[in-house]
Length: 331
Image (cartoon, rainbow, N blue to C red):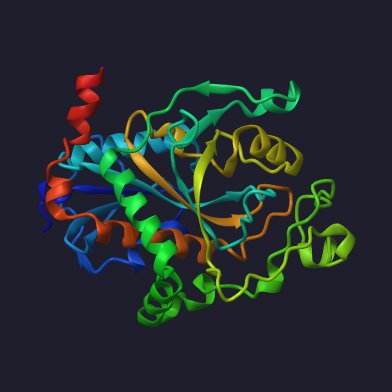
């Protein structure tokens, strides 16, 4: 039986694929809790990364969005009252731009920019109708201990490169049954279509329906040997209750606010579960949806989260205030 009091890191995922990736990076697996709080409907995976005891929770199957994420975080804090650091780790839609060469399998880390906390909540409908960006609330930034760890890791990666591809390879070597779904797909399947080209219909394979006609693709040079094939981007993540799948709106919000990634849960957490948001890019937030990169993108985000936790000393986490206390004092 695992004692709920010993867990200090809360790790939230939106979908099962993300939870599987997170569990693949645990250094130790712990038994699930025998009891949870009376109104806690979450299912948990428990374990250890470096010196930190970690709780992993996933949203209920088929549920998405800001409210569901907030509910999972609230229930987690009821059962695990000593959680001091929060992580939201999973996949998202990338927003490539001339300033940011975001590609499938890359990782985006929420980082404060221009007075923003790193995650912005926007109104999807009005962004389209009025052709202008409407922010719907101010969201807190991650705790200082996480932002300091991100800065240290960013500097280390710039000097020495990062170990994430190697870490993913080790995890898949240990969990061989995951290799088919969670390995890096062929680079040829990473297609960035021009914004004017919408996917015909709701289903069907893009490689067949949209093809590889160069006139429909945005040309991108291969990454050279001095660049990481899996690149880490730092900046603004945009969050809303609806999936972003319009390349023109994506490009507009990227240009206006420097958005690097779109997703559907983080804005439900930031003011109720202060956390760092880490997203692996599995598509380009347009109509050309496919599941091919989802597994690897989830592994990339989880690998970054694990490396981040390895940089944070245990005493730094223990000196942080409990998230539940922070929230109670702010109300």
